[in-house]
Image (cartoon, chains in turn blue, orange):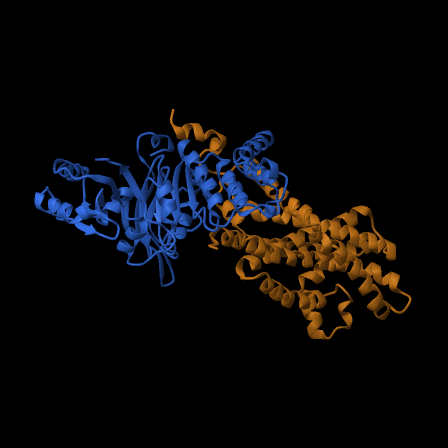
Length: 341
Length: 275
């Protein structure tokens, strides 16, 4: 397969099969399989020490795997590292720019190393500084940059060569929320330009924000994978919450849903403290059926919402451990509609 | 027309990924420029190259000169000393390369270099190119100081240039040893510690500071095989007149042997370094 075969066809830009990397007794990668479809973002989610960085380092030819294979844009990491390096970009959790050089000098150097002419390297450096809002700081040494500016310069350096596959290894670790949002916006922009991204993160929110698909890894093994929603559904579907206009209606509403015998609906519970009825559902048809039933019976409904389990809950369910950010992240609510009766 | 075909033309030049000699030179140039810009940003890093020759020549001339050549004969000692110091200067600057490499290679930018389509040796070669430049500056300052203190050239300017070139070639080969040390040991302090232990006996157990004929037999035997003695003798005879062929060839052979053994190991270490 050549590079040109991949795009647009929905083929895989990254294909990893049975990848193994041991450091002594430690199995950093213990048989990892994953695919990243062309033009999409794969989020690789896992706690510290799960093997995320080792995976990125193998895929960027920095370390050789002990077993298994990995192809990026059709090039094998073990046998075609030189070709592979022409199509990838890497931004690690530590900024990989030269601290003593200015923004311009860093990008010019990268351009020259990518065989651009002096003129083109200058032009491209200026373009990238402009694009990543670093023009004002262009002449200052990178050591004087803030954390966010440094990360943007790093992204700019990764983009000089117009890579078709970009690895982002915990790109927002250590950044404040505002800067993090800037980095996310840049990543989305790169994706919209057709770049395939493999993103590692410890942050559920980051994965939810950027990734099309997720792979959860722990201790060097893939323990879950799929679309973001798919993965959430694995942990047990959604919960439909119905708020009656009159809280006194709660018991009657529970009874109505429980006795109706709707397909696949096991039951309903009343949450008196919140003033809602909770109904576990797995499909939109069930949602429609429950709402339809309550409408027919003439209940006055003040609000309806569905809740997906948070990625923290997904993580807890599949790895058996809480994530570092667990306490801080919040349950998300998808407000479907407000129904006035 | 796919996204990737639009994306690739900037760097599709080198066929199957082989890096041609011209591209390689361009890469070395870009990386050497990086090393130069680092010096520009941090001018204090030139302190050793500028001050070392001045301090060394003053110290050795006035502390040892009178004792070795006889009081009042310091000027004659300068003529003996300067060719030897040229050899020593190369070794000290080479040692600094080891500690610098150790620090530099811990930085994230090295990961970037190693994920780029460039020959990985170019990063090391660029460093050596710049450091040889630093050696040249140190040697020039040493010679200027030497002339001020009474150095005389009995041969010709061409012989002097040959002596300088020989010291550069030998110094560059030493840099590979220290780069290897810098890539192998964990900290810059460790590099410095190991380097000092190796350097001190080599520098002082040589003909750099004094003729070896008054040393005990076992030490004289050691100094005869010490490549620094050979280099010092070669430089001395090039500048002061005397038979040069033997010591020049021995020095070149040492330089070639050191480079051939350590450079491939250092490059392979750099290629496979995991942190």
